[in-house]
Amino acid sequence: MAKTFDVVVIGGGPGGYIAAIRAAQLGLQTACIDEWATADGKPALGGTCTNVGCIPSKALLQSSENYEHAAHGFAEHGIQVKGLALDLAQMLKRKDKVVRQNNDGIVYLFKKNKITFFHGRGSFAGGSAGAWQVKVGGNSGEALTARHVVVATGSNPRPLPGVAFDNKLILDNAGALAIPEAPKKLGVIGAGVIGLEMGSVWRRLGAEVTMLEMLETFLPAADEALAKEAWKIFTKDQGLDIVLGANIARVTPGRKGVTVEYSTKGGGEQKLECDRLIVSIGRIPNTRGLGAEAVKLELDPRGFVEVNAECRTSLPNVWAIGDVVRGPMLAHKAEEEGVAVAERIAGNHGHVDFNTIPWVIYTAPEIAWVGKTEQQLKSEGVQYRTGQFPFMANGRARALGDTRGFVKFVADAATDRILGVHIIGPMASEMIAEAVVAMEFRAASEDIALICHAHPSLSEAMKEAALAVGKRTLNL
Image 1: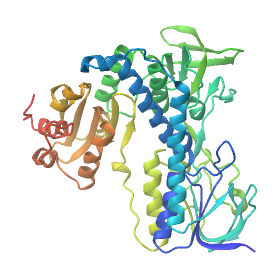
Image 2: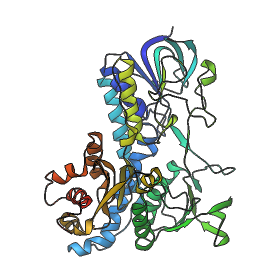
Image 3: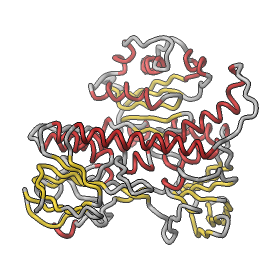
Image 4: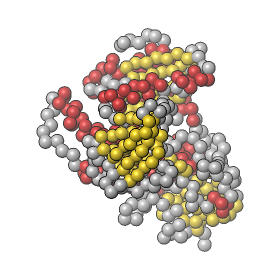
């Protein structure tokens, strides 16, 4: 006999588990189905983000930064390190421990909120509005009936056509996080967020890294000033070899390495020989095996679930959130949609503002932004003013020994309303939150300029950049 729930969430990633928690908090009888498993077959809640994405990559980024600081930065602080050695196995072990702690944390949250968890692949088996039938694959084989279903199945890495991931020589994001020894030569196809982060990790650990990017422009989604500064730091200061406009012709794995044949407009046909190759050219929605055809759930030609502005699908009481729908593939975007959908199911008002979703690249220095770029505003014909302040003039940044980058404000020329904030520098991922709050409350740059910021702190660069919009910085 089928078990009945008010809400069944298919997928236990950031969007799914947060949607389940909020639905349960609102008094709805809630279940969540997720198929992620550890190497020994145990459930591993948290989806791509927790298991092979956001969390483990940040753990390795931190470990690799510590290693580089010990090798090159500590001496300036009067700290002498002798006999420095890399224990990569321990570094990976720590990364796995961090992942398990997050897995266990979600299990605890499910128990705390009385959410029923089913381990297996969830899919539609039929039904109609108010009585959708969902089955659980794997050993469970459970049959569920749900008044509402939330599809939160996430995304998978996009492979190069005709080049399958084996996670030995040709790696996706999961394989890039588990290389057993630092390669001498590492190739990366795609110089976006994942490519830059993973390329940075393995460069610090000793690899010679070459990145092949199909686009002619570096970080085109970022503000041009930010991208220009990042290019200088990554290529000239850190030694990443980034090739733009690379047209991949052929990828050939061999016994001990990979050969990539490519061409560029100025350089003609070229060849890259590397020990391992990371392919990070985007992600595709994970809708195979969802059983969409069983209930005639509408998908677009690329496999995304079709939704409206409220994340409602073509079927009544069926919702979809996160990477499996339109919009940026960001964990925090999925979380916000999960909360909003749970609120709507409970009869409340759910809110997500796509204009104030922050973007972060966790390189060193970090890159973060929210709102419009200068190039977007120019194309839209919007009159604006900018203000910029370098970390070189910030006392806390000097004390930290990291003065790279700047904060940049973009404000409406007539109203002074903040239209965008762009940061490259230390702790940019944390600093961008102030900008998100300001934009949510429709603040002007003058509002930030008038707020007292602690001294000495990196956040003072936010105040100074806001002051710069009115051409009245105090420390530059």
